[in-house]
Length: 249
Image: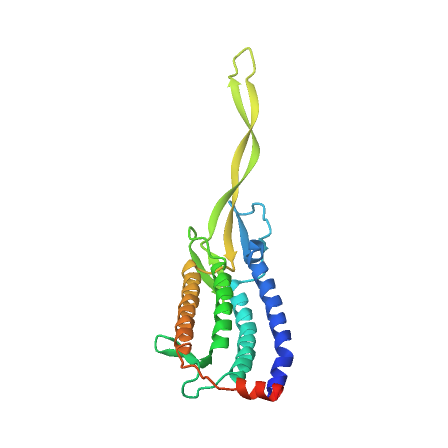
């Protein structure tokens, strides 16, 4: 897109599509079942014991995938809005109401005009809310990263499988005059072991905290840039006399 009218023509559609996709992603993050999975494998206690098929539920979505999708959507929205505001803005001329968005020594946005800084702050506010809601892994469980999708695997846990089997017990011993008297009962017997591994598409608590801190740092940088840009000396063109003299001449 080379001209401002082209940017303005599609900006509304880009904003609508981005907001719709982000809303969908946000709702997906609120559905823990989509981020959870499990694997269960059975081993009989003795050779030749009953075999049971493995069980499992696949992780349908991961926070890592959602972050990647969100990032791709937001890049387009940030760029097209910047194209509009920078084109309409005063540029980097001396005395212009622009400022760099700087985090530490890194300049993330150079010579940003005030309208874009105001818009950017609002978007970062939404991103901060999004980041603060990212599901995190249960800290009571030990997790390891399983694959590039962002699926984590817990330490396997073994649980015994028990079944009830009939047993007999003599309650009155046999004598030379009477046979023994016995009773039957059910006894729980371990016949195998289930090995269960939990899967999760959430992220470590430290990862979420890192993202939130980065958003907060960037918002502070935007606020500093706005203050700096607003300290630009105001331009005071005298146009009113010419306009009104023309009207009322």
